[in-house]
Length: 448
Image 1 (cartoon, helix red, strand yellow):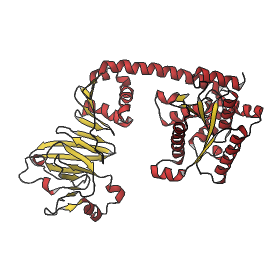
Image 2 (image 1 turned 135 degrees about the vertical axis):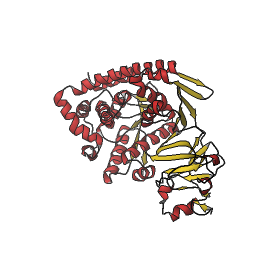
Image 3 (image 1 turned 30 degrees about the vertical axis):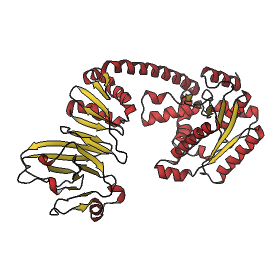
């Protein structure tokens, strides 16, 4: 069947386009996006071209832009072009250049779609791209959701070429006599996808000459399995999950009845509340070892009780992260480490020289305690300075703590805002162990 007919059939089957809709085509000038543009026009879509110049390949990037401008003029299509300082954005966001380019591309396309009144954005991802995504996810570690490949549609974004292989596309441009730009970076094995494309896929072809067709069938099976997976998740959730007055409670006995799948069940249920996979393993370990452990995500907190897991939204400070620790909590899991709290009677026999351990007079502490990062104006009374007050800024400077490090240091304070421990550095004089102490709190911080 000709590629155009397969294109029309796929679009209809996946409900990707309706007559009268306006579609923004993401066109780099490469073979895939040129093929998509040609097919869309032959199918009588109302389209415009959008091109990103990421300014990453010098004259080659400008050559891609010139080619796309000529293409839009030849086809008499509206054209939108945007320039990005991709390296600067990558540095400022702390991400790779490839990730920065991806984020910039989709952010701009969506802004453009809304501003200009387009209904959909079409990208030229094809079947080979979807297969590479699965292999990459599998190599790095994934669950079932990482095996369904690239979705045909997500929000306003559609991918009408996912049915086609690279071989289909190459044959099509030859038949149609289409011109396109070659991106030299596609041949470089400095990129993960290219390693899979040039090293792994050829070996899989040797094992199975019909590898792409087999992979496409597998993709369909994975999607069907994911449907059953979601059904089971919802069904079991109804057995163990209750929500009342802003608090979510998960029955531990019911969860652990499905012990072989408990990590996956809990991860999927907690994912919307921004808990990460490593925390899920720690939570499950705590159900038998550390009842009373408290876990924080960026938006919620989870308490491991003896019979339940209790989840509540955190009260977020608008300027900084704060973690509230109620009396009786024994373990607090933070994004960058773990804090344990243990009350003991009498007086300690020895004092550890480890700066990540602290002993405080329990009778002088007002709960709930708070963990936060420092800010300008903070002060405390460093142990050993005979009760003299010192600003944290001066303490950090005197102890030669780099600026980036001091922004990561945790400050432990009482409910009244009195700092009692600069975690990993110094206890406050006001909360030290004295001859009058008859009960104390042992604190241990372990970095991630």
